[in-house]
Figure (cartoon, rainbow, N blue to C red):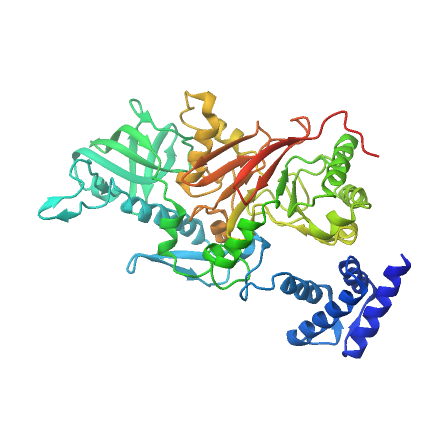
Length: 526
């Protein structure tokens, strides 16, 4: 402790000589970062940090915590280009919104300001934008794209082609033997389902329909194939819009940063980050869901987890709620978060090298049950933030960027919502996880169900898009854990930490593999 106090004093003196003033808590934070180095190295790093602060052109001589963190982060990525970071958390409310331009057949950045209480027109606009996204990739698919003519012969003459119809095309005719329509599956009349697109709606007869794989819930987009007569489309087959690999989708967004975060350009193709990702074979990201901090047994298991990882700190530990019982006083959560910070009191390496990310559930305070959901209030996590400075309070959902990999994290009991709202339950229940993954991948959205089942903020719906597909989708669903990969996108469900006998998931970015881990019941660490 004497060494830490001496280093704090040295930092204060060094900063004063450079014209800066630093508060005691900020000097303590910087001292903790420099303590592992040799005394001569500390002096060198202090000089480099003050030079970086001078380059930031601060408005006042007082050095705040965010300026220090920015300086340290920039030093940690020496060798990387401007804006490149190894790991970052992206708030759902900062995810950029893109609109599809049908004239140039490209997505363009929409920089219009967004609000939680938007104009009434946004109620239909956000669904139209989701439809436009699905329509453009469907029209590019081999089944719907026009045949390529080579030497007077169609290159893919063996493949049957379909012509996509709009609702207004069907409504303008009395009958049509073969029709395929892309639209929103909706129930406009009691017990009668329709497919709706921006041009109109057509009633469906699903009595003889063959359902493809997936969960077909009201509020999702479907491809309905059948024959049209007397105002009704008799459906022979009902499927989803085709999925599209992310590499194909990105060609229609340009070089801009579609993922979110500070970099101006997308980090997906950064050669330096690809090299870092390849060489950091020991890097891991840990995911836990249903972490009930009000249960003593959970706190004990978390202590064992922290102690176990102190010798080999992961890049991040992601804890998903609910963090307390929903019936409890919200302010009790403050005490539980303080206790969480106290668990890592002896884990110095873990606190210095690992980001602790908290993703709230619908039951946590103090936001409504609408996605995207705001983070936990900082006032409730003040003690935890002080005890574990690298704690980050995330939105639900949130996005992670590790080197070139894109990861979506969402805490939601979505499997139960799918099962309750689907028109047709998949007969193959042994591979239910494949139906779940296919629904998300094909719909290009985290919650492709009716807004009554899961409301969304209209202006921030793009934060829920899964287009282009990310590398990993992490769902914190309380059902049984699973993992399924489709079109180079892995959908992982962590399962419940409490119900699964304290099991959790470990993701290894270098190999893109997932490991099942568990804290044994008889584990004893003093």
